[in-house]
Amino acid sequence: MIVYTSQAEIEDIFSISGADLHTDDLIDNPSFWEKLCERATSRVNQYLMGLFTAENLQNRVRIREITSYIACYLLSIRRGNPALYRGEHEECLADLENMQSGNLYLDIPRRQSHRVVMQNVVIDNRYFRNPNRVEPLTSTTVIGGQAVLYT
Image (cartoon, rainbow, N blue to C red; front, side, top):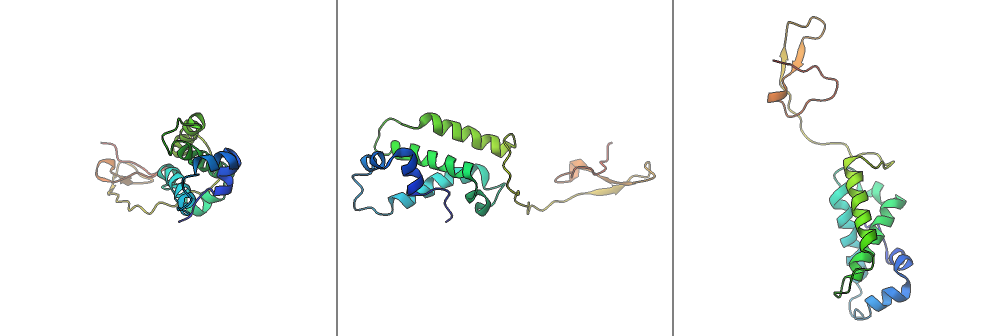
């Protein structure tokens, strides 16, 4: 699985001693950091995986920063402690929602849609230049710029 953060990035934000204080009971669990990075990455993927590929998301600084803050938040609440990065976590989730809706721009190529589109095209002789019209009620989608049949 491609992850968007690492133990070193989390420790840069959290500090090495702070991370050690929150993980001092995990001496026998070496895969904890991998699981934490995967959990934070999966939260980012919930918002953006339908729009972008994992390879493109992995290389963006802002995405790595968001994933690191989510991981810091998850680390801070791991043993029932009060959340240390709650404000940053909420800000990151708001940014992800804005990226998903298109309000925040990411200079990443968008994933191509592989959805099948069915269109019902009819000939409407009222229009001389372009008599082909798409019926929106019986089609799955209408692509921008297409002539639509209005009844």
